[in-house]
Length: 359
Picture (tube, rainbow, N blue to C red):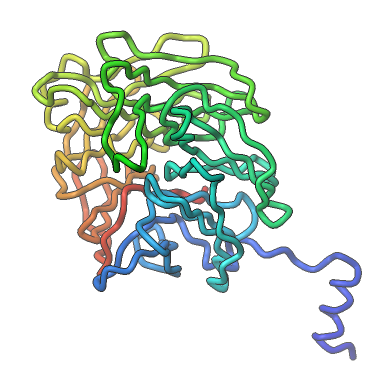
């Protein structure tokens, strides 16, 4: 009778060995950056209820992450203006690679894989030339940097794959920064935030800019509906007493729709849209504000603000079968539905800004 070792050797020789998948890493529902009670930074894989399946140390504070579409690999991005992106084998915790942008550039905290997983795209700041860059890395060849192209604006932050056509949509926040000035905003009078729709080779297909009176509303975070509608969360750089929207919708070829513009409760967001997510059926969109301590749920058809959920230091947000899942900087994990909020789990960790779904 053939031994198990001989059987596996035969599979390897024939190129038929089973490929590692996310199931081999425990089938996590989410990735999130965080910080433990001792102050150490990490990336964690989480169940739907917020229980930790695995964790990997990071050299400094993380922000968001990207999950490979088929292999159990995650890329943890440094918080702006960090210069590391750690590629992690989520089965073993082994470090596959540490990515660094070219001299004179830093990461912006987000990235996305191509649909086939062969390339990784990263949002970057070319701060010496005050321009946004998308870095391109060969995810099939040791994550070597192979190209770069313009992001379509200044301050590219979040970025997603399009669902209506091949390509990327980039949130260019419009804010110029330089590491020598820390996180100081250097160009507020001249800000021009936009959404840029790019082909995977960097060709600019379309661009959406906000009205001139909202040029201080930095477009920062994105959500994508299956029909290609983009939800975007904004962060107001003007007087926080002004009633300005923190969320909007955009479909390529159409003007942007700003949500809850006339609802005074937008002031409760304290000018800060942290994370944004569509509900599973796409009829609602949620936006969090850790500075306001609130999650607002809006109607994607009429644009009305439907519900507010008060939650201290809430920021991470993702769709759930009956509403949303939210995480907080106090380690709490919540299920959000039309009937209210229900705490699922509390970890001895401070969750950072984003919940990255793996489906």
